[in-house]
Structures are given as C-alpha cells and as structure tokens.
Image (cartoon, rainbow, N blue to C red; front, side, top):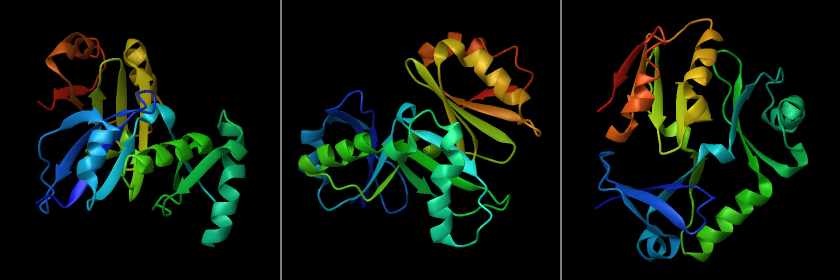
Length: 215
C-alpha cells in the first residue's frame, strides 16, 4: 500500500491536479490527472506533498550573518526586498537551513495565493503536509543540471536549492545566459521531455555542453 501522495498543481488550472502515490520504497505508481474533488475522495490518510508550478514561486538564496534562527527569519524579507518584484508584505517566506556556502535557501510565494491554495485543497478534503516548488523535485547529480520541458515552459535545476523557470521560446537564450553566469559550468545537462519536444532540444545544440536525453 502506498504511504505517501505527491501532487503537482498549477493554480492557473484551479480545480485540476496531477498526482502519484509512492510506496514505502520510494517507487511511484501510475500518474493520474483529474479534479481536486476526485483526488479528495482517495487522498485521506496519506502523507501529502504538494508541488506548485514554479511560475508562481520565487526561488532564491540569501546570506544573513546572524546565527540566530529567529533573527534570520526576521531579516530575510528585508534582505530580499530589492530583489523581489512584489511587496514583501504580500509574500510568504519559507527559509531552509544555512548551506555550506553560508547561504540560506528561500522560497517566496504570494501570501493570498498560498492561503487560497490551502483553502481549496482543504475544501476538497486534501490536507497538505509539505509544500514546495515543482522545479526543486527534479533529480540532480554533481556537475550536472537537469532540464524538464513541458508544453510551453522549461524548468532548469542547477543546484540542490536553485532552479529556474522560463518560456520555451526563450529557452536557448535563457540557458546560454545562465551558463555564462556560472563560475563552474556543468559538464552535462540531462533533459526530460516528450517526443514532441525534439525540436526544442535541437535548438540547444549550439550550447557547448553535452545534452543528454533522460529517456
């Protein structure tokens, strides 16, 4: 019997979700798609993780000198204020643990949107235990980036807590710029995509890094 439930959700499709049950060994079952009301009928009793479409989430990192956790949490919104497009009073901040490079990973999401998502899932009988960005769920190995191509956008994971979202039509330029910004470039970019995305993968051939399909 599955002991956890993983849900992929885009708030732009308010009543729709994609989900998969994962067994005790971490092996996923078949992916399903449907209405929240349908999912609510089978979700009770499972530990539930919700992955929100990264177009609605900002992923960043910040270095706060203080070692005190409460002071870190208080300082993070103000340290990121100039880097965020939205007013910090309208955002919810979730901070991870300080990393070996002294940076603290931070996820931000519009507070009203977050409250709406939680309320909609609760109304459907689905109680979320963990919430994160879908891009952070991509696999990652040392010296390798992971790229996921969807119908109209791409997710790029470059480090454990660093990932990006961009539209497919600007992917070659975005990826090229991102690579040039790195002090240490990846040795490989692993691409997850459908057969229909072959043309988009071909557009990446001018990047001087090995591109490998995961399928």
